[in-house]
Each structure stands twice: as structure tokens, then as C-alpha cells.
Amino acid sequence: MSSSLDKLKALTSRLEDKLEQKDKVKPVVSPVKEVVKSVEVKPVQQPVSKPVKELRISNDTVRDENNIRVKQLYEKLKIFEKSADFNNIFIYKAMNLSGIGLKEDDFGQVREGKYIQIIAITYEPDKNGKKKAKNISLGYFGKAETLETTLKNEIIEFVLRWRYEKAFQNVEHYKDLIAKVETP
Image (cartoon, rainbow, N blue to C red; front, side, top):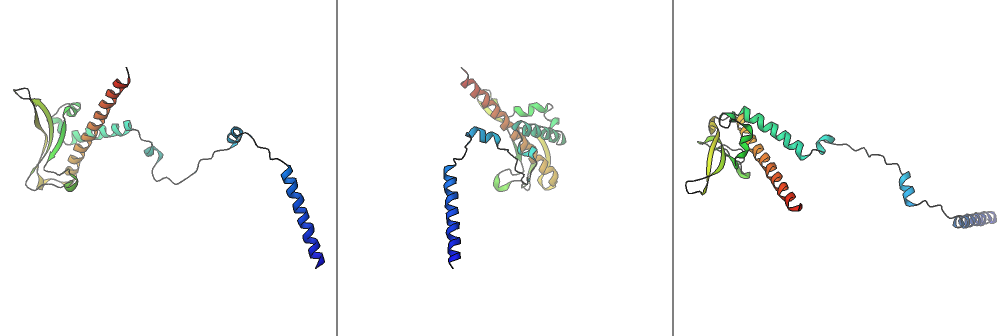
């Protein structure tokens, strides 16, 4: 038993000696800048559900892709028959559909007994000089009951993409105005 006690005392003494030596030795601390320089940064590899290209899409890319699709639909739906120049379709103040719902509660629903048309809205002065709304049919597609689902979806897509481009144009207009205010 005394040998176990002696061993325990010897062990305790060595531990105390080592703790004292550790306290006497001051750790060498590099300045923070040097530590940061020496740290190697490794990219963390995580599963990505979408390609990186999609995550870094700029507004210009989205706008360009939207314009390409609007032009494709412009040709496919034969809007050029009523408005020969593609760029002129953006002079209209608004665009709507008759015969198909675009509101949240009736989105995409055809209205029985109605005719499907793409309607462009412009404001023109009347004989007294007052601005008056004028509706212009850009496309007529027949009765709602006879409309194919694919054609219906393309008509809706055209109007929504036109509105999207119009929104980009409005944002651009306001950016220009803000730049005028910021620059003396």
C-alpha cells in the first residue's frame, strides 16, 4: 500500500513540475495579420441543387432571355399582322386579355362564351385634348371553348412576358431620373 502511495506522490510531483514549466514558458503569439495570411482557405464543397450559372443571373440576362421569348411568341401568335414592328409593341401603356382570366383567383381560366383577344391599351388625345384610353386588338383567337390549351398558355405567356419587359423599361426610366437628381 505504501508503494502505491509513493507512486501517487511521485506522479503528483512530476505533474506539478510540468505545470510550473508550462507557466514559465510564454507562448509565441504572431500578430493577427501574419496568422490570417498563413491560414489556407479551402472551398467547402456542398451539394448544389442548381448550377452556379443560374444562381448568378443578372437582370440583363433575364431581360435578354425574356425579350427573345417575347419575340418568338410575337411571331408564333402572328402579332406582327397588327403591329409590324416588334419594338413598337412596347409603346403601348398596357396589355390585357379578353376571355382569359389573369387575376389570382381565375388565372388561366377561359370565360365561356367569350372571344379570346390580346388587347393593347394606349392613351390618345380626343378632340378636346383630353387623354382617352384606346383599346387595340393585337390578336384574335376565336371562341374560348375552341381554344387549345397550348395556344392558351402561349397567349398568357406573351402578355405576361410583355408586362415583364415593360416593368424593366419602367425601372430603367426611374434609374435614369434618379441619376439626374444625384448628378448636379
